[in-house]
Amino acid sequence: MPPTVVPAIPAVHREVRLADQAEGALTTGHFTVAEVPVPVPEPGQVLVRTRVMAVTAAMRTQMTKVPLPMPSFVPGQALWGAAIGEVVAAPGGGFAPGDLVHHPYGWREFASVEESRVRRLDPDALPTPAAHLSQGATAWGALRRAAEVRPGDTVFVTGAAGGVGSLAGQLARRLGAGRVVGSTGSERKAARLRAELGYDDTIVRGAGPIERQLRRAAPGGIDVLLDTVGGEQLPAALAVARPDARFALVGALSSQLGGSGGALTPVELDTGLIITRRVTLRGFGLYAHPDLPQEWTKEFGQGLREGSLVFPHALLQGIEQAPRALCELTQGRHIGAVLVEL
Image (tube, rainbow, N blue to C red):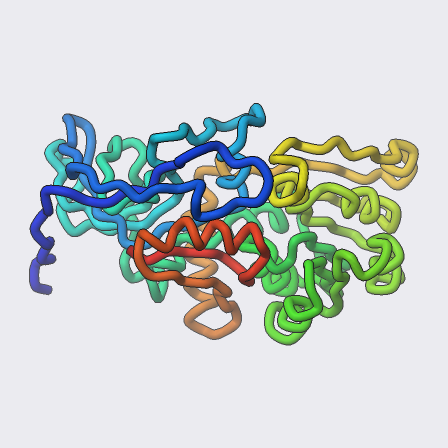
């Protein structure tokens, strides 16, 4: 096999910065694209050329003044997020130029990254590098480990057209679910969820009370909830929960993309129902399961190659399109992951 040819390192590169904290509707005016010197890696760091980056709903929340359990973006400084790239300089020797890696400093063409925050990837594990940025590991872990989907279960997934939900319907089916129901924001998306992404039925926000729609779509009740939204959909799911139902909570899109300015909106739950129906509510975060990405990559690679899984995503071209990508995500323009190829 011939040696990997690493392109020359330029003197400058581009990065996307937060121009101002965002309240209300997000626009491209909340961002600036700056040209800055390419960083020089210090001992214990590697220099990575970013090839593809992800934008997520959580990034919208990080652009506000709302206190969060994660760092917020700072006006005048570059944003960050999950990205895939190749190592171009590795003075510490732990990596080699040409290595394909996952790193947390997207939104810039080059990044100097601590070796401890770089994860080496097998270039043959998935059909494309972009697939390493799927949110399927969260869906897989939440369904398999937190909710423990069993054969014949009825599963309800909120935010079913998002990065997690667009894979969750397929994975619930893969784990043996008997019926899979998803919620989304439009009938256009609902039709695709039913036709291509593993969902038997859908409910559409704004098309009537959520609980009434859910009772129609799951007349026998639900055994599992994978909740990426929160808001009114969580108590609606509890109202139709079967005894011993398992709820896996992974996100709060109703706050992140809604009109609350990113603030987490409290939800009232009927504790009597939780107790009498023995419902388990469990929060799930990928950060607490460091072994999951490798497990998921193996499952995902097999599914993609045999055609039993698909990876819904939008891919915009050029770092200058990253602000538009996040704006379109908040507007619900896409199904699946939203990625930018640099």
